[in-house]
Image (cartoon, rainbow, N blue to C red; front, side, top):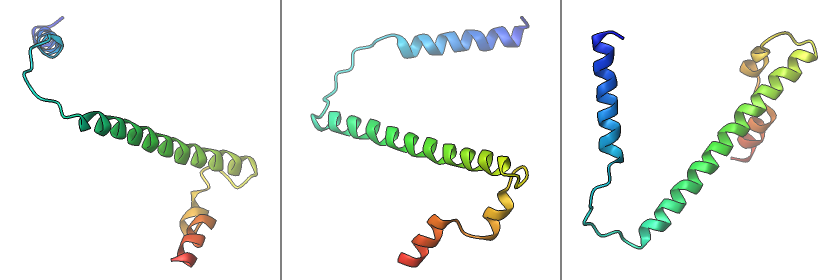
Length: 93
């Protein structure tokens, strides 16, 4: 291990120890903080689920499109015409 790499390793160990060593915090935690934390966690889970659903749908469309013989990466059709979901949104509002 070279000298600069060992120095970075030592810094990482020191930073980890600094974060993990408990210290006394004389602070007031508002009762509403628990609600804020729960809301934040649920929001992050919902956002993650939405992102997974979107990318899974894109992957499925791409796989099934290539199986039907439209060619690899059939994104050309997506770029020239709107998807049915987009047309419904434009018609409503």
